[in-house]
Image (cartoon, rainbow, N blue to C red):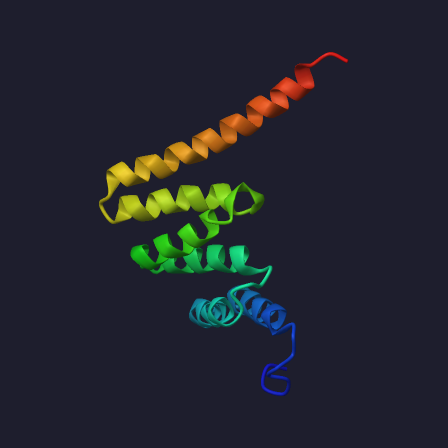
Length: 131
């Protein structure tokens, strides 16, 4: 489809699905290359946060920690609106730790705790309030 319809407006979706297929078929190098193409070619895609997170995961697995760090940072820029925000903060911390940057990793880990605890506090307040 990508070759036949190179200007198809939803090729970002095609690339996303192709990357998932490669991952499911144990072809991580092809999945990463496809995600790289998606990120480079469609910077405004609504798949961007997930694509960057999945890139981070593949890069982290390959021990490419600086590149994984960058991918997780791209997700973190989306903020808590992304469903991959907390996971990216956590893995960002691990990427930094693996590079020997313990101090910055603690900062990333503390943001995860802040995010989770604030969300729990809000939920707890809502449930405990009386009508």
